[in-house]
Length: 297
Image (cartoon, rainbow, N blue to C red; front, side):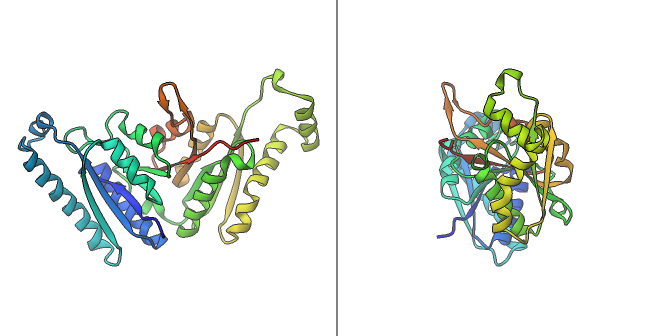
């Protein structure tokens, strides 16, 4: 069974841009669109937002906002299958559960903080950190023109080939659906001298130095994806610097930025990782965060 693309809406301009992005992606991939609005009865915030403070009035407002948002999408994409769910409950839990049943979850990058704002503060980061499926964050100003020909799907690759399998798969599938080029970026830094081992020194010598070694590592990582998607143009990008800095340096030509997130928990809960955190805060294009489990060596 094909999973739907799911969009979380909350009435904000950011979430409406996310809904429009999700609808276009669903059309490209030939899948259904599911729209979820998660909310909780909040008397004080409702009054501050100019909405009557009883639960029935809030529920009516939420359903009305959902109907209006979905109506815009169905008018634009008449053949798109759309389902809707209005869920009263914990917002993070609702969205994480929605992501589990989706091909990907699409959210606005910031809500406006009243009754309709679910991505204020750390909530959006919690959803990304907990979701088992890819999550795409879209800003309010996102437009279809950002997906024009010539703009690339940029994806970060790091470590051994298996470390970036999920992010690369997502990037190539997305590019194939869009007829776009994939730019695969591998950043590298000079390791501490004490990190060298006789085995690693031998590999570096055989490769001709650090940068040629990194280029060979990148080529090996994307080889199976070139074979699986022969019609997708690929640009290989190897540059010295931190991963976040190098990715941001090419974000200006990106229609989508794809980064991986290692699935692990710490004593203070799940984390999204420094690279994903940097992209979400500084990249102007939509950002896809793709979870991947740690592979055994």
